[in-house]
Length: 184
Image (cartoon, rainbow, N blue to C red; front, side, top):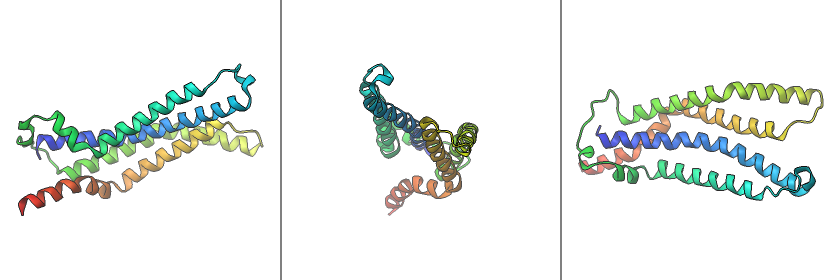
């Protein structure tokens, strides 16, 4: 494996981790959208403060994060060409594993970190939500959106762990196809 390949792997993994962060940002967007709608329907509740600008700032930040993540994941080769020196494409690294194995290990680690970071809060909020529902108390919209986005994170973490081999094959596939064509 060449040094440039390692850069490519790290950039793509960073982009995949940003997808997890984007889900967290989605929760904030949903909360501020809810606040915006409530402020439009009941302006005196928020002292007639217009929340549109706050929502737009969060939305623009969210869209920028999505764009950045997309560039890191889908334009990895282009970024690698910009940051690598010509020697990085020739210099061989002595790593234990192939590119696909490194992707697989990283996907499992990202999945585990995601689940471990969100699971305690998810369980606590879920318990509160069930308790409130059981006693017919109104539930908080923020807690509901937190549960939805946290559930998405947990699902993505599980998908990354369970399907790490398939996803790593998909991520490493383009490079193999290029190598096969070069050999012919």
